Image (cartoon, rainbow, N blue to C red; front, side, top):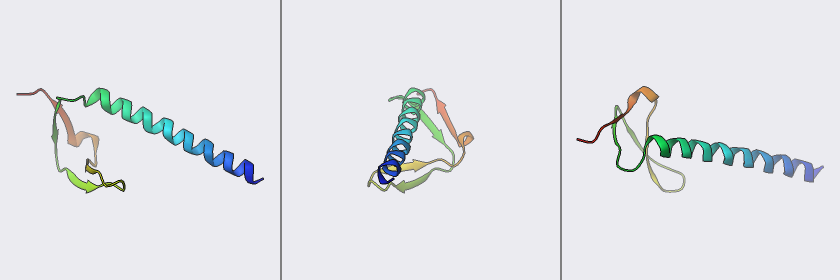
Amino acid sequence: MAAELNMSHAERLAEKDREREAVEAEAASKFACGKWLHIREPFLKMGSDGQRAVRVDHPRDLRVVEAP
């Protein structure tokens, strides 16, 4: 029984990893290095891993613009 619960938990963690990797790949393709972003009402925050981050509440608050 315990092995079944652990396997289920491991499967859920693996699924979350796949979802995270998919989101990171999509973000990397849309926001490649050198792109300029216009963010309306950015929120600066500190992640649980100590990394600084910018939170955007709604997708329409973020625009990719051509570099000047």
